[in-house]
Length: 413
Ligand SMILES: [Zn+2]
Image (cartoon, rainbow, N blue to C red; front, side, top):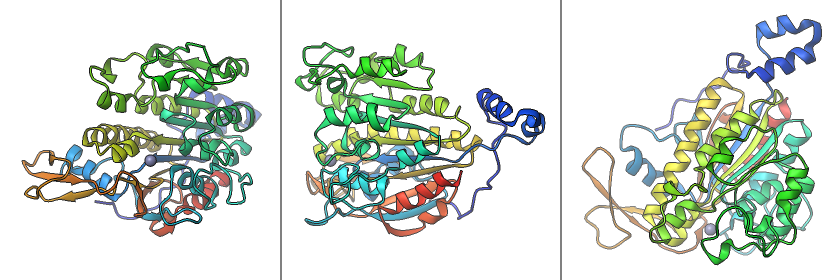
C-alpha cells in the first residue's frame, strides 16, 4: 500500500512559483534579480498538518475499500512514509480528547484533556503556528466544524478550557493571528441578538458572542466571506470565512437538508485549495492546520454515511495537497488523527449485526462495520507523510513527534 521510502530532492520549485514570488524575490535580490530568477527563487519550507478527527486505522481502512477499492490507493495513504502515533493524554487513563491530542502535535507537550495550546501546568506553550509566524511565514487554520473547535484551538490559542470559544476566537484575532481562518461557527463571532450572515437552522446557530469579532477582523485587514460566492472572491493575504458549520453532518441528521444545495456550505477541500492559492504567494512558506471534524462525529454517531462522506472530503483534501506539493516539493504534508473515535471494526460480510453491509468498490464484495463505543479510544493512529523530513515518521512514536518533526522543518528556512 505504501511506496518505497525515498527522500524528496530539496530543489526549489521555480516552475510553480507565483508571479508574486518572482516579483518579491526580484525586489529582495535587487541587481541580482535576473540570475536569481533564472535559477528559480528558493521558496521557504512549508508544513501542512491534516487531521482526520477520530480517524484511526480502521476508519482509514474502511475508506480505502468503500471509496477506492482494492487497487487504487486512497490519497491519504498515497504518501511516502508511514508510522503510528500513541495518543494518550497526561493523567487519568489512556483515552484523550481532541484538545490534548492536538496540543501534543501543536506544541510537543502531552497535556490534560480540555487543555488547548497549554501544558499540564496550564502555561502557554509555543505552537507550530506561532513558530511559523515568527519565521515570517503565512499561517492558516481550516475546519468543517466551528473554527474555534478544540483541535484547531490547540494550534492557534492558549486556554485550559476548550469550550471557552469566545476567548479562543478573541485570541485568534488578538494574539496568534492566522492569516486565513476558514470554517464555521459564526455564532461565536457575532454578539448576542445579531443574525449573522449564515441563516440559523438550529438553536446552536444562534449568535452568543460578546463582541462583533467579524467587524474587528475586517478592521484588521481581513477579507470576509460567508457563502460560496463571497468565498470565491477572496484574494488574501488575510481572510476570514465563516460559512455553514458541519454541513455534511447536517445532511445526515436533518431531513430535507442537502449540503450540496446550501449556498452557505463551502466544501472543505475547496477551502484548502483557496488557502494554498493564497498561502503559496508567501516566498517564505507557510503553516496550515486542517481538521476534518465530521469523521469524529461519524464515530460518536455510529454513522457510516457520515464516515464515508467526510472520508471522501479528507481524501479530496489530500489530493489537493499532493497537487500543490508536486509543484512545491519543500512542503511537508502530515496526515494523521488526534485519536480514534468509536472503536470501529471491520467484520466479515456473513457476520450478523453491526452498522450495516458496505460494498468494496469495484469488486462485488462486501464488508461489515461495527462500532464498539460511542466515545474515543486509545488505539494508536496512523500517520502518513510526504516531503522534507517525512522519513522521520517511519516508526511508532508519541503524538508529540509531529511537533518535533514539523518545528524542525519550519525552522530550516
Ligand atoms: Zn470526539
